[in-house]
Length: 574
Image 1 (cartoon, rainbow, N blue to C red):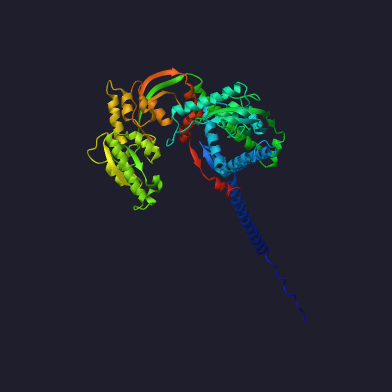
Image 2: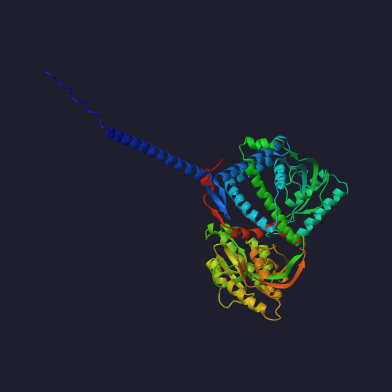
């Protein structure tokens, strides 16, 4: 019997290739999916990194500032504060600065450190705005300017061992400020002290005898040009002296009269390791120089703008003003004088004293007695107010109160001064309020200031009207007694809204009404001339002219804040 082998069944080639293709495609698809997922992950990571580092934190006129730049700028400002504190501590350790003054300066540095995040934000915004303005004004900041600023940054400033004799004008009891006679007396005393020094008396002898020094010998310790140990005017005079020299009598910004002296000078020193300290602190020198550039821009722009008015003739106007103070309430206003007799002599505690307390009876009896004395002509109202009123503020002014609305005062007082039929000079019988007993002299009544100023302006526009007399009659400003004489006004001398009203008015004419925060104004333009500012004008312009020029221009800039400093930096920095 024969047998035959079974045929072997072989897979078909096309079926095998189909399976391989299917596996291959699955592998490719899986790999593609993994790759896509990785790309998505990388994209997400990249976007997160970009958002945290390179995304704009703010924009100024289309110029973006990244979050990383802000972080680096903030690190610069913190480094500068740390350096400043280290210098103070070094001066204290070397005996160049008292521990008390050192602690005071370190406390002030600490306060600035608490606000450094917002201050950095403001510095960057102002730097970009002012750079644009500098370009418009043709003000250029060169790399050499920034190099010079870097050298100053690396320099420990010159220090001077200084002494001070200071004479303050007296203030009469009950008054809030010195009279001209008191100011003149203080100036004369300071000049007498200077004359004694010029005559050869020792500083120590004069300082001790005058009793006007910061210490027995007047020492204020080692100071730098930016010191707050004395008034800025005095500091400037001290830094103009040679060793062992005395300043002339210096009138300070707050009305005192100073004489300064120095005995030693420690020259400024450049720290050769400053750049290394910056690098070691992880501070970006490029960002540091950018911030210094912003400071140079501000200084050069300030110098240019102020110089354009102070150092060369410009258009000025001779101006008078009338100001009506803003009302604290509504309706008509009444002006009066009063003499207040409080139980126990203290208006602030009168409400705490029981009605049955004898102090109330005494206050009433005193009020009635003084009322009768005034009524009989035995004493003038103003004199009685100065001598007897427990409201010492108005008492020093003869009892005169500002213009008041009825709803801005306590009911009893308001009812008394707004009673119908009152005439100027009427004396009212004592009135009791929660503060005590008031003797009142009625001065006058007027419409609300926003209405009255319009009436005054119409009157001022009439031919032949004396604007100065209108000012004496109506104005609440301090210069009312001089007929509202404001003097010559140059650009940048006054707040922008007042300057605009003055220079918009016709020469020889009267301005439109200006409704300002402190009241309602009209201005009379008496003359116009091209002239240099006088010393007082120049001081006002140097002190605030740049800010008055810059503030409205900054408001016009397109400033967009996308993230706050806290959002960029995270938790508040130490």
